[in-house]
Image (cartoon, rainbow, N blue to C red; front, side, top):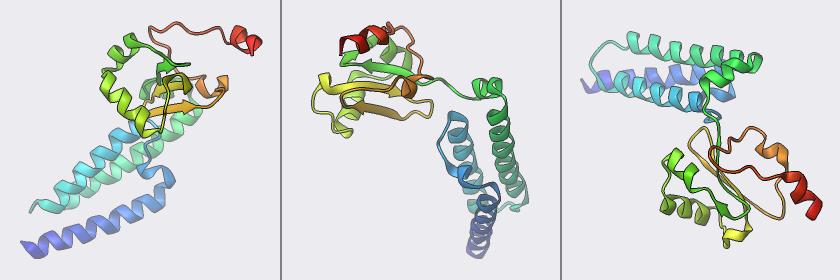
Length: 174
């Protein structure tokens, strides 16, 4: 049994290396929510393949199918905006110019202590110095600090229940 586990683990490693080389840099990225879901699924298939006495072939087929699916979906997302909308969640604004959006925290199911933790991790020292906090489609939290945030960086961010500021007025006042 131990030799079989070792053999299946070595086979899994070799197959993953080959699949990653074939499919490219995006193989284990977390660029979108669909990437994250497929990465978790691949990990589950690999774990099952390496730790069960079952023959590895169904798991290898499942793994190859996951990698092929990621490749096809990535191509479709690049060429068809509707595919991107169908596979991804929208990033959500949690805080802007030091103002906290509690309704969006509730929508994202993020607690205030969790947000504070992310602000500390980002080395934010004052709420007034935080330009924007975005709950990304991948589940990551981006904290933007500094004097100004270009509108282009926030172009795809949903404001949810938060009032969207009139940036023309803000820019005219600076």
